[in-house]
Structure formats: structure tokens, C-alpha cells
Amino acid sequence: MDIDKDKIDDAALALMYLTLHDNFRVWKQIDWEVTNRLYQIRLP
Image (cartoon, rainbow, N blue to C red; front, side, top):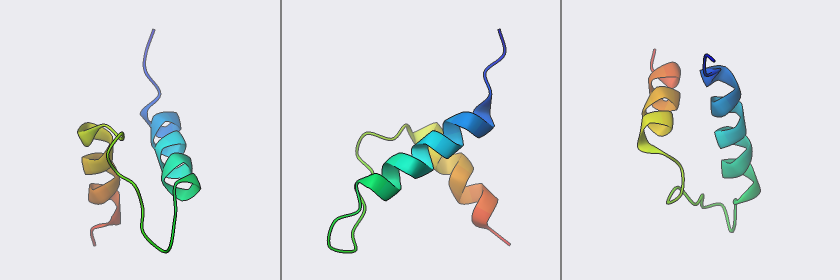
């Protein structure tokens, strides 16, 4: 079975949004591979 990385990225973004507290985000439990992929998407 192939892993759908887009769905994983969407879930990670949802978790980041849900953990928003006082304008700070909690990144501790998000896999580094996922955060690196999300970071690359935002680069120009």
C-alpha cells in the first residue's frame, strides 16, 4: 500500500492548528520529515 503524503501533511497542519496556544504552535510531536516537507512547500 502506498502512503498518501498529502493526507499526512494535511493531518499535521490540522494538529498544528489545534495546538495553537497564545499565538505559539507546538511542534514537538510532529515528525521531522513531515515538517521539512511542509517547510519546502512554503519556500518560493
